[in-house]
Length: 307
Image (cartoon, rainbow, N blue to C red; front, side, top):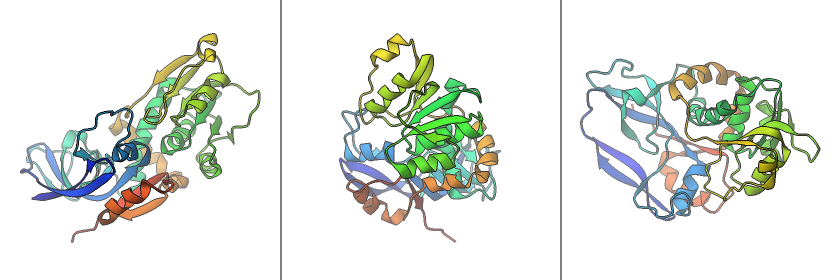
């Protein structure tokens, strides 16, 4: 069986490539992709070839990491899935793939493709929030209302039930979406201080603002990827003896999914994080446009159905 895989073959160049898939092994699943997603903050720097976390890129590079699929064959020792089941996996922009059963996340019936895919980045955002362990009475300032920032707001409100969540983003549309997901207010230059902070913008001016606005001994988590600007500590960090933690990837995708799939269907604004939908056959052209146009929050990629 052959697989179509989207790869970065050089800086600013992506193309579909064809690969042979080996037979399904004992603990593997053969899956056909229903939908995927473009993660703007992570993928565009890789496609442009200017990701500061990858100074000497080697090509070809794989693309994407969020995949929603249906099982079309199972290995002879698979116990958790059967043909026809829906799942999440991390193989990216591919039409079919082999997935280790242990790494696949089952998706309940009735969950939309958009919500299913958001489970992955929601878990990544949740990991950073969980490092701070905020109480409902704490106050939290979140900078950067990209997808990670918005999902951090969602988790603060719907898991930790934090009431005072203030967001900072120059885009009023994104700030408004944050309010619909549970934020209390948009930031205004005032004397208010905060017990906790989350940096999701990858911008030094926002990182400096958080350090300025935290109370002494306050906690700050960096959730942004570090692939835009260098983030530097300011004198306030030392004067206030702040606590700084970093976070990457998810805390437990399987366990988080159990909570997310019970909660997310009751938060309809979550699906608005997908501001654009594109067919998989148009992905090359889509990436070309993303390199020059103002990017959306997130792109849903739909794959053709096969009867």
